[in-house]
Image 1 (cartoon, rainbow, N blue to C red):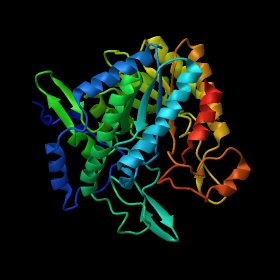
Image 2 (cartoon, rainbow, N blue to C red):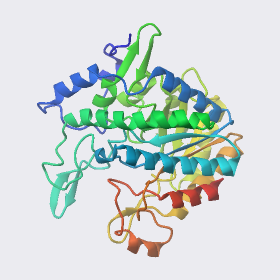
Image 3 (cartoon, rainbow, N blue to C red):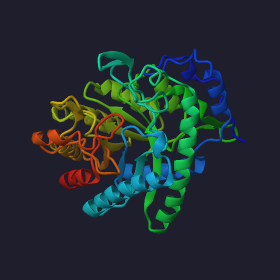
Image 4 (tube, rainbow, N blue to C red):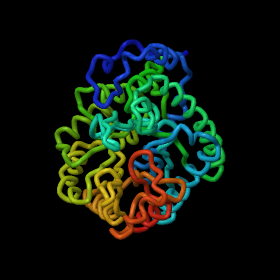
Length: 392
């Protein structure tokens, strides 16, 4: 029988990007509720995903990880899930057609409700407010009340994820009949109250499961080696990812690999590189050489989104498709030059038609037409398909 773990290493460690809600009167009750809830994913599901990622690490398959920048609680119904899963399927099928390999499908879905931010506050119409940190923490509405962190939102995130995961399981059963791999859930393991509240320990097997998602990853802002996020993900049996930016040194990267994949198991660790078009050619090669020389059997994934965000003339954040293509092409060149298999792409993609990323500067004028993202700009499926065609 699985239960909550004993007090663990991460509980005494510092953590970045956490909501300030410890004094909220509902905080203790929300934590207690999560600790008593059933895990959202199972050991068997996580093991099956690990098998698929091992194939990618060995060069026998590819991977597409795609979905919303920040999920909305209001899009957890079957219709929205079907649209997002269909978008993921379309992109994975595109990669399969271009590469001739099977493609593992992982969505940024069923838990991508919290976002790290570069500043704790923002100014809206002359009023300074706490920044929006995702629906797990607060609301995007520009008011002081809406922006207050509320720990009860962790329980709402759990229920929304439950609904989505039920639909994903049904799709996996259907997909397996056609030989497809997925769709699986993933999100950034950011809010430690939520993530740690859903860790479940199996004493018989002496292993812990992160019950919030199949595939958690650590972000560029929370990958400090002596902090709680790394310790948490190092302690669970799920396959895990880690975002790597251009400021990462080879020594830091090797220490992250050693912490997150000490046994060097193919598919256990996915390195998600988010360098930026202008930095990738110089910053990436020494990192690749270090990991290859050390013999870590990682999955190599390109995230061309997060290093290429800019402000348009009107103030909205956007990304140029040409920048995304350039970074992922260079990523492929560097990784393959080192004799390693490019696992695939990590993309922020909308299931509906939006105007958030642009192909040319003059298209910035159309950004306000359908700019629907809760946080960062997403590609359309058509734009993401163009990127895939240019990279593979």
